[in-house]
Image 1 (cartoon, helix red, strand yellow):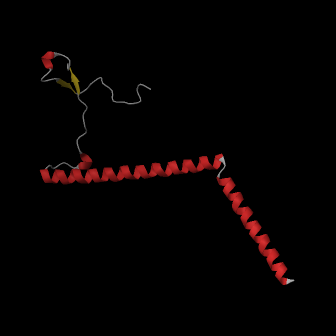
Image 2 (cartoon, rainbow, N blue to C red):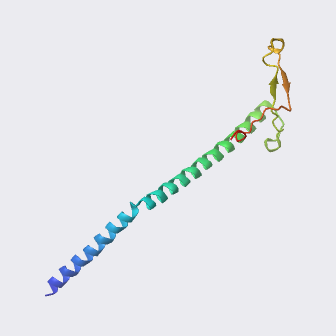
Image 3 (tube, one colour):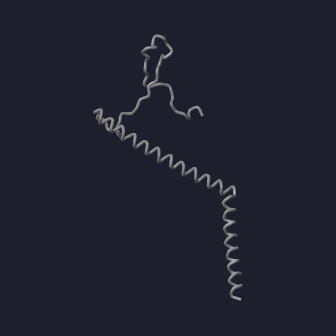
Length: 116
């Protein structure tokens, strides 16, 4: 009698366990769940790319400091002079082909979103 009860209980428990496992897997494979998983993976990839970019920037600053020290430049990398954009004026004129005139305050725009 106890043997039959044991096997009946073990079978019922195995059935409940298998049903639960299958239902969880089915829920993971719904379109909404797959979309959420893809979004989470994209966010993780974005964080990894951001961390990589920050590491590259830190390495770049460190290497610039090493090069500045080796070349004897006394500029502080945090307080470096701002970069100025220079546009070439008269680049098509043969008169200026060897020595073009540079204009600091150019009308040329470097805003990528300007045309969109």
